[in-house]
Image (cartoon, rainbow, N blue to C red; front, side):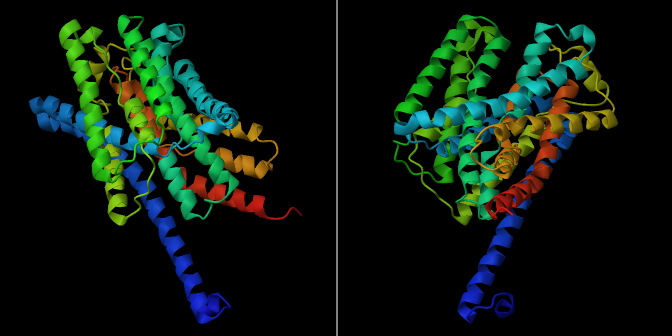
Amino acid sequence: IAARLFPFPAQISYLCAAAYAQNHVNDRHSMRKVLSFSLFLMLGLVASQLLPGALGASYAGFKAATDTLLYVCLGFIMINVGREFEIDKSRWRSYTADYFIAMATAALPWLLIALYYVFVLLPSDLWGSPAAWKENLLLSRFAAPTSAGILFTMLAALHLKQSWIYRKIQVLAIFDDLDTILLMIPLQILMIGLKWQMFAIVGTVSVLLAVGWRWQAAWNVKQDWKRILGLSVAVCALTQLLYLATAHWYGPENSIHIEVLLPAFVIGMLMKHRDHDTPAERRASTGISFLFMLLVGMSMPLVTGSAASDAAAAAGSVTAAQPMMPWGVLLLHVAAVSALSNLGKLVPVFFYRDRKLSERLALSVGMFPRGEVGAGVIFIALGYSLGGPALIVSVLTLVLNLILTGGFVVWVKRLALRSAAPEE
């Protein structure tokens, strides 16, 4: 078969056929991984509707345990995102344009969806509500970050690792993840109001950023999955200890709660990047990501039934107090939000004018995939009692985007091949 496919000597034919087969296996493996993300998220969503009734009074303890585990998984993922953050500090000015393009690429879908949530999902008498705006600005932030891990794996499997498109996507995806993490800080401050805790949070964030920049990639430490998971547990324990201590001294409403996103990201930044690309490492990392998506789904509030209606009536937020819509209407909103989300990611088309339009379009489409960081934003929004139709639409939009990720990457490959071909 190899000799017929490739008109070369037998050894070269065999190597070419083996490379083709390996590439095909990698491609299928990446696609299965992405679809499994969607499956685990949906399984978690189903479980979130069944477990409260099945567990009864013991559900509260179960929920506290799963939330803690979810934070640990999120810390693990963010440490790995931070490990990918590699820039030459001596050339920091050359990254300025890329950072602002990445910021715009993250901001436009966020703002489009925030406007949609306010003006389409809420009644007109709430359009001027400050509470409605701040809640939806936080919840809609799930659409901002590109899934760097999923994207890089699939593009590398398609042999695009040496292309300009891959290198530029790598910079933009990491920067829009960083922008998402940084912007979560003022959004959370907006949620808690102008209190003294705000200054403590801003001070902590400033110190973390300074440490991450000053000692970036300076920590020569072992980076297998066990070490990274242990660091994630330590980061989650420290942030939780800070919350419990300040809650004990000043009360829960005046406590300091720093989300795990930024501290974990900075830990990853400090590490001198090493690749541990072994089957065991891949299985462990993938398993933790699957568990994270399952736990995000399980953290969703009840959608239907009398318990859901009672929860909406007693809700302390504008979004959670909205009545649930029929599933057909929800799916229409999912399609609209998905379209707006990806439309906002087309910002790079209008920049890098020295490159072909097909390359710029490939760069923009490469920013479409979403994943764990977006799911983490949704989980953080749950911590502020946000819910209602906007929350369900956000989760289902993330599921739909994960299902479409394979199509996005194939589209990028075709555009990249078109860019490489001589112009006719």
